[in-house]
Every structure is written in structure tokens, then in C-alpha cells.
Image (cartoon, rainbow, N blue to C red; front, side):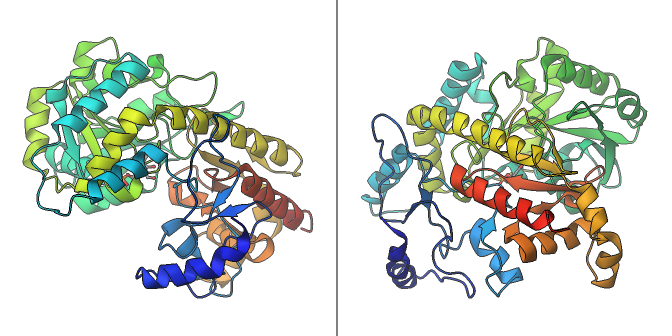
Length: 447
Ligand SMILES: Cc1ncc(COP(=O)(O)O)c(C=O)c1O
């Protein structure tokens, strides 16, 4: 379907109770072919089509419909912020949802046992990781599980350690549970981030009760090795710090790298001192379905966290997640290399941008780009103060929108070490990624 179906889509949205935003055109402005809600994501010649843009504008989506609220004059052409993907969902998910919708009753569900079996099966097949279904608790997102864990293991006023730059949700969890975020800033070396072990150990003080591990790490893209995880795990065990391993980005790993589940480490005491949080929110883009899970081999930790956790599960979330786990492998095995290639597009585009560099991502569909020399050239520190912006990177965020039409997340949102950086979401058609980068390159060439 072509771009001019945008008008029909807006009419459809209105009748479906959804509103297209002021400033949004109702269709993504790109040179790529654009498909709409009505087009089926079926295979052609055994391949899914990730190049055709699935138009999400006006569907009440955080990625495309929130930035225009901040820039209401239609300045945002490429929304490369919040970590959701643009692709049309794996057909097995939509099929399962349609099937369930044929049954017209939405009372409470009886159990999520079948979903737990599917989770166990995926982990066994993909990672040769033997998960006991009895140790798995299904939750309504990674957030609720992580917050329950902090409430259980980190009393108010105690410290929670994390490697930075890191996901901006973690400081939020800390504020929410009234614990103190302690940051161990990583060292940037040869294009990737490494743990500063001396710093990390020095911060494992007696009042530190938990450490949040992010594997793979958002936003730096580290996929932690078995050795790194074991070393973290042993230090935490020695210092009586519980490991909370957020593995929401688990499946999205670039060629040549392997995801190691923390709970698969070959040290039972280390594993027993941990809880893992996972979901299909990133793998199959199911964030809006609010379904996730956590697991631990330690029954004492499990019973403590359960005291603070009450899952309010959504039927559709359970149906969608189980369908993806059971039947979505083929779709995912095509999207993963596609995302890998999007990273390569960034690497080659950034190589041609003077003074800009990109961290060599090992996983995630997020790119961590160092714009510090451009930020300095436009005097963003001074301009941020004059314009009441939270940081130079926030000023640069506006600058990129105004000058390139590209919306990215400011690095200063990601705790210590985020200065000078922007996070770019690559979960899109490669044509959109390329156009956004071309636009950024043209803007900074004028600085
Ligand atoms: C590391 C990490 N954890 C958790 C979340 C959010 O998880 P949920 O929406 O399941 O609560 C995100 C979303 O971007 C994330 O990157």
C-alpha cells in the first residue's frame, strides 16, 4: 500500500477511538514504502519484509506520537527514541490474538502454566539453559518485578549498585523504592565499555544490598561474557549483595556474540544469589502487552520477592507472549540479523561524520553515539543554561530535531558517563535509519 492511504488511516483511527496528533502528518515522512494497519505481515519468498515502513503515526504509540507533543510544528521526521521497534508484528502473534478474540469473554484467567512451559522451552532450545518452571513467576512487566525485588532486598536508605551508562529506568526504580543509586562508571576503551573492577569493588560497601546487572546493557550494547558475569557474581556473593539481572534485551545479540543467562553460570552459590528478569518486550516488540517474568533458583529469595509482588496479568499479554515463544522463532531469526545490519549502517555513516564516533555494540537495537565535539562546537553547555535545558545533551536533542528532524535520547539520561552521547533506536526499516543518519550528517556538516 502506498503513502496516500494515510487519510484513510486517520479516519480509521478516529472511528477506533484513537487520535492522530497535531503536527503529525498521519503517515511517516520517508522515502521508504509505507504500509498501514490493514496490510498483512506475511512472508514473501520465505522472507519477512522489514524494509517497508509500518506506519505507526496516530496509533497512540510512544515512539512516534510522543515527540510531536514536544515539537508541535511537525519538526520530528524520524523518531529514533524510545526502545520499541517499528516492524509489523510476527503473524503468529496477531493470529493468536484474533483467535482468542473470537471467544467473547474476558474474565480472570485460570493460570499461566502453559506460558511458563513455553518460556522454559525457548530458554532450553536457544541457550541450552534448563529453567525449572516452578522457579518462574509471570509478571506484568520487568518494572513491577524489579521494584518488588528492591522492596524485598534493599531496605529504604540502603544502596543499589549499577554499572553506568545505564538504562534510565533504574534510577527511577531507586527513587520509587527510596534506595540510593550507586554508579560505577565503566571505562571506554577501544570502542567498547569495560568494567572498572577496582571502582566497582570499592563501591560494594556494607550498606549496598543489591546490584542491578543489565545484560545486554542498555545503552552501551555490552553483552556480558561468562567471565565478567562470574566475577561480578562472586564479588556480590562475598559482599552479601543480591544480583538483580535485567535480561530484557537477551535475544538481541549481534553476530559473533553470545548471550549468557546469569542463572546459567557454572557456580551454584553465585546463581543462588541472583534473580533474573526477562520478557519478550524487545525480542518481539511486545512492550504494550505488559508481560514479563522473573526467576531464581533460590526458594528463599523467591518467597521473599513474592511477598512484594502481585501480578495483574492481561489475557492478551499472555496469549501474545506464548504465541511468540512457541511460533515466532522464524520471524525473530530474520529480524535479528536485520538489526545487526542496521548497526553496520550506523557504523559506516558515523565513520564519515567528522568528530563523531559510535560504540561498537555487541547487542540491543540501540546505538550509542558520541557527539561530544559537535555538542561543544554549538556551545551546548552555555545554550542549555540560557534555554533552561536539563543538560547540554538535552539542548543538542532539540538542535537535532530543529536541524535534522531526528529525535534521539540525550545521553545524560543514562547516568554517569552519558555526557556527550545520544542514544539512537535502530528498530526500523534500514531506509529510515539511513535517511535519519543522512539528515544528521547534513546538519552537522554545517557546524
Ligand atoms: C533494560 C531495560 N529494562 C526494563 C525495561 C522496561 O521493561 P518493561 O516495559 O517490561 O517494564 C526496558 C525498556 O526499555 C529496558 O531497556
